[in-house]
Image (cartoon, rainbow, N blue to C red; front, side):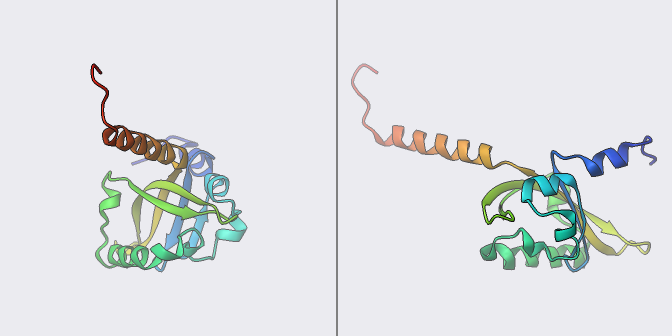
Length: 148
């Protein structure tokens, strides 16, 4: 499949979504402007670092289990259209919510060689949904007035 001229460069340099690439052990080898905007680390700060740079400590074990399984099998259900919503950390230490999907990068022998993830900051939407759920739960607990 050939991409139209400029398409790949446009996708990789976009600033809206983060595009992060890693090698087979989770070391960042690609970090676009969107990743800088969302997470606060420059490409120079992120490239060569572990993905733990943005993973909250309490989620690291679970992350690495899934990552290593994907590298061993060459498959991840998050690469088949399913989006995952997870917390992440920014350079400033802020906890944000991101949704992402991944694609497994393969070498010339078709062995897993790393991943590329496309991530979107959904913190505002996550907070809005959480607020609406709380409001709904509160309404369900309150006794209804007669005639309503």
